[in-house]
Length: 288
Image (cartoon, rainbow, N blue to C red; front, side, top):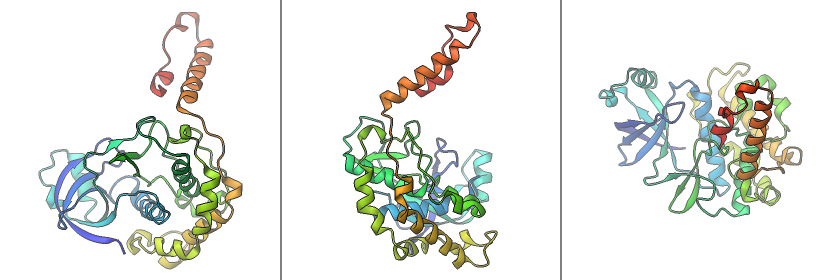
């Protein structure tokens, strides 16, 4: 089971994230980034955080420790923002905490050396779990003590948002050509040979068992929490076994992506009226 802690102090919201997680001090003397059950993404994002994060840890990737945080909104009575107060009041009870990495920095291309082997393992995990949110624009990677750490895995397991269509995505190819590590020549084939055999039903059951029952209850189409757990195990085990169908191979480096954005901007301007031809394109500016 994940360790359980009790929140003692709500320090600050992290407004950069769409779910507005918060920094929280707990009774084990630890400091955590807490993702709340009352956020718009709901329990599904927290389930993905646990399953993807703990699977990644067991496969040898660096993921900050995850804990369950018992949160009483009263510890955040000093928070002045009414919208955040609404979020916190809707999140009383068990939430998910990720160990806060003091002094860590957001990853940017070229910041540190990342070997093709390590890049390949990260890309492979993202491909297995269908993580659509580790792009050059939003890497969801941190650099701490000179090493790469994976955070924010809640955008993985997108199949569980509509279980009735999960089978159709079982062997779906992974197309994220602007992956944050695409410029590091990720050796995805080597990662597949190393990691795919490790993703067994037994390992997956161990990981899925870490998700609290309450987050899995009342899932449409299932008559018990255990059947929901087995659905995760079956889907991910089958996808790992069929990796030849979805293994990504084509990546664009950051320089290529910038060039492609400039080409798209030029094409857009070419279709404008003459008086707009020299107005900068906002899309190209953002992508740079």
